[in-house]
Length: 480
Image (cartoon, rainbow, N blue to C red):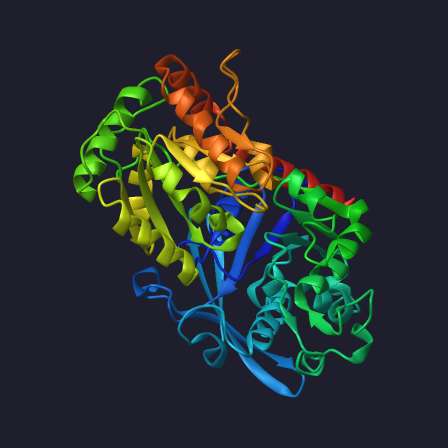
């Protein structure tokens, strides 16, 4: 297509090669949709040791080049493969990436500094010159720095623009001042307008300060992070970029998450057969999990990372009041030890009403979405959130706090006019959460209202198609 941008999507993870959270899903689904719409979008990510071998069968090094990081000369091996129409470049350096896991090492600044620098230096080596380098989160925050200050002096790079997307402002890549020298940067970058952050260096701030434009993953979150309440001390920096700050909601993969075709769930269904067939899925899940088979008992679910952000510190306050009701609770997730322990205690205390699975299982997650009536996501803050969109796709009505992407996607069900696709509460407190739960139970008691709410949820369109169109508009605006 005419005038379609060429995009290099730089991410520290991308499903199915590597995923720790929503970024991995986005880095798989958005490029795929951009390609469908005519853009030449390619993805680069590190070649981690933990990438499953069957995904890399017969994969050979396509190119090797050498980069530098201060005094170090570092080889960069590039593996290339195609998946779902998208070209992926897996960047490898044995020392940095042949380790267990993706994050959490003392030299992560150096590992992702290498990745960022190699990602923007490889254009000539792989024969792909992008118009836009689309960087994501702090691990790629140095891409705009290297691109602007190290490479734009070469005419080859002069027209390349950088976009930096904040997926979660809480994670800021903060290190001591000494890392600048290790990253081939001098003390000139240690300034209020540069990478300095309360006496330290922030790689997230680097991306925000040096990129040509900044985006985040919902319109409400883009507004929220300009305030002290949600800005994690970065709100002033964000406000300084307000003229080039965009908020574009994420989507979910509608092919992967399709209750009509999903092979993981017990009984397939669409919006017209959801009410009866979700009950069949519920009964099958109850049997599989060893819960009492009670088709008329409302099933609540949680599929999530178990962290403060997701609102789980509210649960100890409401747990007994909630579990004394005629309900069942199914939890799938892992994260902070105190929340794993809290839910395990709930499973022990209410063995006939709850099942807790610590860990993650894609197939089980899909079965839980298909079986549950309500999906709990009372987040303290939520840049976008994918769980509530997936739940709605499967007709599980989300109960959320009105913040970030949750505010943009979940509209409170109004029984008077039949509008709304879930339940939302304003204040971050236990009373608000219980109010949302009680609103949901009130809806459940009237099957006509429940059926309407489920249909509304399943008709809500949060596919990547619209979001990808918004990204293409933004890319074109950046290139004007």
